[in-house]
Amino acid sequence: MTEMILRDGWDLESSEMLLRREMQRVGGMVLEELLNSDKGYRGVRTPCEKGHQAEFVEYRSKEIVTVLSPVTLDRAYYYCKQCGGGVVPRDQELDVQDTGFSPGVRRMIGHVGGNEAFEAGRRDLEILAGVSVSAKAVERVSEGIGRQLEVANRVERECFVSGKIVSLQSAEKLYVCLDGTGVPVVPKETEGRQGKEKGSVARTREGKLGCVFTQTRLDEKGHPVRDEHSTTYVGAIETAEQFGWRLYGEALRRGLNRASKVIILGDGLMDEADTALVQDLAVLVLGVDDHEPALVIGEMALDQRQGAFADRAEADHHDGPVDTGVNGPSGHCTQPPGAIG
Image (cartoon, rainbow, N blue to C red):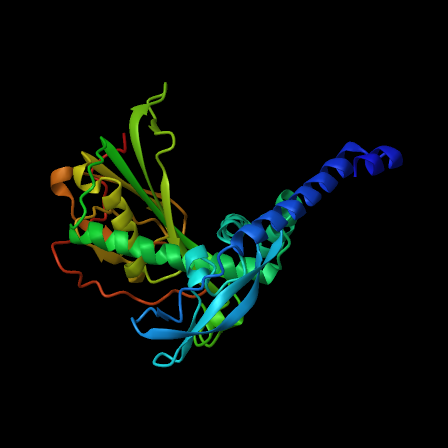
């Protein structure tokens, strides 16, 4: 290879890309041999996930796309008569069950899929890592990772809301910001949903975004300054009530119950029909004339903290009214008690 590069006068970019490709190919061969040193044979029988005894049938091959190159994995295949399904111990051990992508590749796919369009992510993955996958694969893997993260986040959120986990974080001032806007979606996502005009079909869903951050100092003009690296975000396409609990859980995780003051920021274009009450979270809603945009600013001390959630209703389709009968004390204030600082 060295002689070929020198003989043909390859430039640096061509040389380094060729060498990377060949090194990945050789690395893939080594990895394939390493993986196949254990084919996952666990005796004549092995337990399935439900504890039944699955019987060995044969060895079966499977191609796995790794960060080095595609490799062929030979694994022992077992069959459980009670469950009526196959058991492949090696797939479980390597975390490649029901997928053709290694954990490393799935992590890469999740990174690009969560930051850009799936087709753009596919191209970047090929250029930057030399890993070739389809745009559909980026979509499916990214959405699968998203579902796993949502389950984990929901469990954590429920623990904070129920009081099973109590945050030890504290802040002088904790800010909770929320907003929503119409997000264009494919027709199947708005099937049966009415648009803004009577008899029209919705073309968007309302995407809601919230963030939580802290503030401890002022700038030279006396304006509040957000603490660096203190912002965390939550977002979803769901009803105002559901999103209210999502943002409430994040605020609890960030130390809502230990904050000296909680300040809520939102857009002035808030629809009363989309107001969701959330127990123990102070949210103040300031109305505006007609439909002129305005900033909603409100603040409550620790011993005054009870209020309601509100979010902007600007989408072509709102995700439905909410049940305001949330258990616990709550109230709705329409005038801010003072300035933010």
